[in-house]
Image (cartoon, rainbow, N blue to C red; front, top):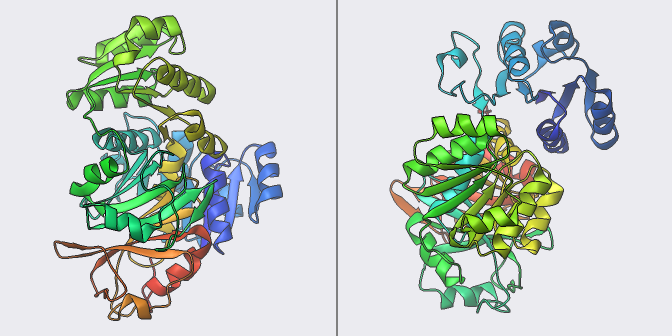
Amino acid sequence: MRIIVIGAGEVGYNIADILSKEGNDVIIIDKSEERLKNVSEDLDVQTILGSGSSPEILKKAKLDQSDMIVAVTDSDETNMVACLLASVQSKGAVKIARIRNPDLDRDSAIFDKNHLNIDLCINPERESVSTVLNIIENPGASEIIDFAGSRIKLAAFHVNADCPVVGKPLHKVKDLCSVEDFLIVSISRKNEPIVPSGSTIIEPNDYLFVLTKSENVKNILEFFGKDTAPVQRVFIVGGGSTALLLAGALEKKGILVKLIEKRQDRCDVLASTLDKTVVLHGDGTSQDLLKEENIRDADYLIAVTNDEEANILAALLAKQMGAKKAISLINRIDYTHLVSYVGIDGVMNPRHATIGKILHFIRKGKIISATPLHDEKAEAVEFIALETSEITNKPLRNIKIPKGTIIGAIIRDENVIIPGGDSIIRPGDHVILVTLRSAVPKVEKILTVRLDYF
C-alpha cells in the first residue's frame, strides 16, 4: 500500500515506523525540518517538507496514486482540510483524521460522505477515557481490551513476587485455577514479548495478557492475587479536555470524583460544566493538599495533565499517601516501561489508543480490530475467518501458524471457544489472535483471500 502520513509527531512517527517495517510505501509530511530530519535518520520512508493542507504539497506526494491518507497533526483544521483535499484529488483513498476538539463529535454529519467524507475520525482523549473506564470497571487489571462485542476481554497485569503461580509452568497454572476457559496469550518480560507455551515458567513481575470470557475476568484477577473491590472514589489531577470527559463519565457511573486543577479560570469552567464533581483549585503534586482532601480514601488517582513528569509524580505521591491505585497519562513509549517498576498501576496513553484505531484500517483480511499491546512489540487482532483462507476447516495443530503467534479464542454464533490443537476454525467465525509485530506480514498472508483486499 502507498500511504501518506501527515504529521511527524509521536503518533505520525510511530504509524510511519510500523507501516514502513511491514513493507508499505510511506510518505510523511510535516512543516518541521527538525522532525523530518529525525524521521529520515530513523525510518525507511520518504519525507516532504510542507503543510499537509496544501494542494501542491499533496500533489507532490502523489495523493492521486495513494491508498490511504492519515492526518494526525496537532491541528484539527489541518487534518480536516487534508482529508477534504484527498476526497477531491483521490477518489479511492481511505481517509483518517485525528480530531481532538470535543465539540466535534465523531458521529457528526460534517464527516459523512456528503461533506468531508472521512472514513475514520479519532479523538485521542475520548479513546483514552474509554480505556480508563474499562480498567475501573475491572479493578485489578492494568489494561483491559474488549473483543467480540465485549463478550471476551484481554486482561493485562503484573505478577507480584508473592503470587502462588510464580515459578510454575503455565500448564500447572491452569490446573490450579477454578476458571477453565482462559488462556495466557502473551507475556512481557524485561520489556520483551514472549509467546508462551505450556512449559513457560512464570517469573516475578511478568506482565501477563490473559484472554477469557468477560464474566470470568474478576475470578481470574482474584486468582492472581489482585484487588477487585468496586471503585467508589476517584481523584483526577488536571483540568483539560481529557479530565472533563473522564469526570463526566465517572459521574454517570455514580463514582465520587474530586478534580484538582491549577488554573482558577479553568476551575470555574469545570465547576459550571460538571454536576457532582468537587473541583479543587490547587497543585495535584502538593502533599498538603492531597492529605487535606483525604487521598488515603481514594480507590484511584488519575493524573491527566499535559506534563508527563508531573503525572508520574502525582501518581507516586498518591500511592505513597495511601491511594489504592494510580494511573498516569503518558505519551512517551520509553516512559511506559518505567511505571510498573516505580509502583504506578496503569498508563493512559492517547497515542497508543490512536494507533490501535488506525491499525485495523491498514491490516489485510476481514479485520475487526487490531490493538498494540503494552510496549507495542505485539498486537492483538480480531478477524472474521474467510472461506478460502488458510486457517479454516482443519485442526489448528495442522495449520502452519507463523512463529510468534497464538490463537486465543474462537467465537461461533453465541459460543466462545478457548481452542486446543483439535479445534477447527469455520468460515464466519470471529477469531482472536496475538502475534509479535514482526510476524504481522505472515499473519496477514494466512488471513487474506484472492480478490478480497481490505
